[in-house]
Length: 275
Image (tube, rainbow, N blue to C red; front, top):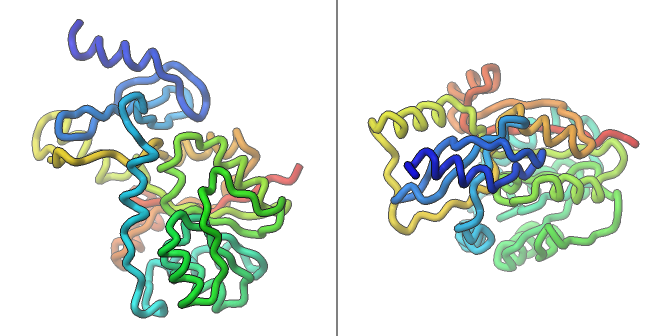
């Protein structure tokens, strides 16, 4: 059995984690020995990592352990940009839960502007910092088992969290339980169809300027989203897309990415569809 046949054989054993389709096609690999394989679903376009040989939950700890709080919250431009983006599409100011709140930069701007805010965080170090520095309540808990009453938030956010959790359907249903009717969700995650990702995949395929991975590299992303696959997820779980755009931390590039959505990172507003 040649390499291509092996990849096709492996793909047949997998099912897409959004739509359940078994029609998956090898898309690309990562790792020093190309040992981590990603497959694209032909139905919903989601790119799924093969989880058989990946301890994905253990790999998440590398994100939790990096503690680097800002010295000046007012100058946290990424957090301010997130707040300004959300404010364009959500005019009121009520209750907000930030899942994976980190050092509390986004919570800071929401609280400053009149929202009732709360954070959720895996790291007790981050949580204690936010409580002590910003006087904001933070629960230390895994979101997947979190219980905080039903339908009490007007806005929930997950910034670079969704792509790390295998079961996206469960995540969206969990969020729905926390939201009031017609509540909103703000997401940030990588855009797998970005121009830079496309170029890198082409380079790897033709073996020119291939990306080098250290032997210690382990992936943290389970699912990689495009606008199409993310929209498919929304329709499966009772949400509608309000706004999708890509962005950059560089002002001039950001103007381009906001209008032509081929940037490496996406930010998105969605709304829960009232039953």
